[in-house]
Image 1 (tube, rainbow, N blue to C red):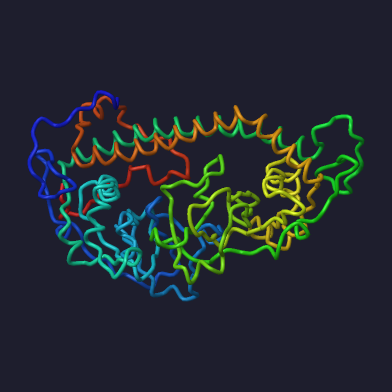
Image 2 (image 1 turned 45 degrees about the vertical axis):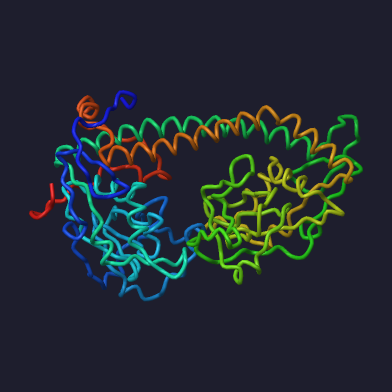
Length: 469
């Protein structure tokens, strides 16, 4: 379906350095002719919507700490109403691609732009405006004193050229992208399942090593706590608060809105790969005057306190510059006279830690493990020399699993990059998908899980009389 795609037979100049040539039969309109401001307010009863570069417009969770970086005011009456199908733009992050089509009626920050997008197929409009070439356009239309504080200017935004294929072709493009995204996402999901299975094998290797050691002939003793059970007789058990220097420390309660390369990196859970390395393409930063209070060092352990990732632990292995951590992460800095950071991290990857975590959740509102609970975590500790031997044995036993997981992670990244490029090439007319779309079932829909919901393109078409087909 994808391999046989070819360019259109005839092109014309678009007038844009990012769009270059476009299909000769497509129209090119300035954005100002396709949008109409919407300023409805006083509907605090509607769900609260957020806008993100990665997800577009989505209903904001009121309980997930990963989304709650910005406080929600008590009075929402001044928030703007975004009707299902409205174009919502975060004007301060438009240069990053923070925009999209509202999936339902809701309310958004009064600082956002809300427009009626008068294009025949709003799903096509969303795919087009969120594509890489259009992120560049919105970047050029933004201005400010320094990167990270740019603001979208209305006059420049209104001049952005918008590609408008015939209405039937818009529908064909949406149908093709739904099917292509479904195939790619199923491939990604299958690889993630394999990674999860390999992760279970890694956990089994770790669990035995950090609770029983390497010598099966060593006498055991009761640990006094249920999750590790019996441990080697010469090991100790200490609470986490007695194994760290200083106190457990929460991170910065700030939105990840800057990517200034000269500022300290703002590390979040999404920055970590499965192998513990940091993703280069998720870089965010905080101003130095904020970051200094949450500084990180190699060897720091980061513990997730709430949300979907509650109880997960991440080890900061290496840093190429200054860094700090987000507020839904808790920093634990190991006392290296007592425990290697790598050994402490290994324990958090064991079945014993998983059992402790499950027994600790406060489910009154959301699952949560605060610093006070982490501080009381019991950790079995062998002598330092034995810790090093255990870590070496774990590394050796896991080596083929780590290699396989790293390869799968890279394959997923390549598929995601390919998906982004494919969308850009299709919506800007670099590839003709009409024949491929015609061979698809009329009701073909993408099979996409919730965390990739922004890939689903089947949004209701506009029914206004003055839409551009």
